[in-house]
Length: 350
Image (cartoon, rainbow, N blue to C red; front, side, top):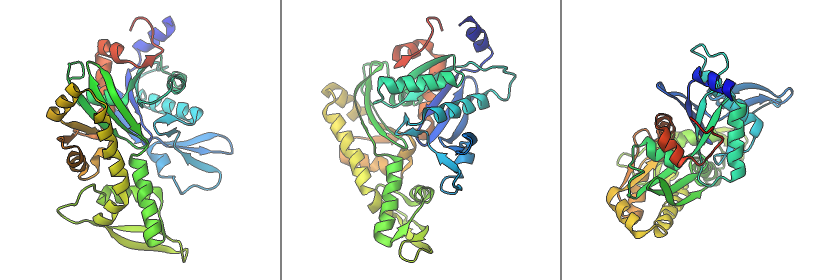
């Protein structure tokens, strides 16, 4: 322990948003230093890691038989412990590469989903400690996002946060430093990509890759009718001829593909409001609903949710980084960190 503490003085404390789609790393006094996909490419012949992050993502769907590009997190939860550990080690080492750090042993704050079990929390802690962390603090992502957006979470006020990530959408109401009511659903960015893939198959007999579907969603995807119609190419394999095929699709068609997922998100927001104490609902009606996460960038999603709930909805500034910014702020406010930490293998003194 003493040795760890000494090494800790020569390490940079870091906050991590360990997401299904992307992993972001915040270094104390430096800000966000890493924003890379949560993807690892492995040579299955010798279990050697070939690439992590951006380099590994480029390999998805393009690898030969002996190389596999995998996402070690599914719905925000570790599905492959060893690969997650190696990925975390890669990111921790990368943050310490510039300075002289013989053996980095940082304090680490990690954002976790709302519905994780104690076993899953332990898996995140163990992976981080095995990757080189000396202390691990786990904070719910919704709470971290609220802190990252500077919401007054410790006041007696209702704050509603909808965090739409890659694997899950988390809907929570926060007051007095705790989460009062919440819902989590497995409909988020990845599900929307699948909606587009299924739509292309059903409507055009066209087989799309996951990255192609995601690019289409980002270019022309929307939740409400747009003032300026948009179009983009949809390229894939014709299921009838087996040959490459390209068609032009409009924002209206992609909106049709996404409508079921968007309706499911709005319905669950309404269901969460129904189980929220009326005093807090009154606050939310006055203060509005905050959207964070990559899914919040879908065009017009704030308007669609506002129409459905009759409550003002606003998108966080830089919604992709809200959670990791929150973990970063907690590194500077250890008293608040102690109050809201979900579970941690921390030492008695900080």
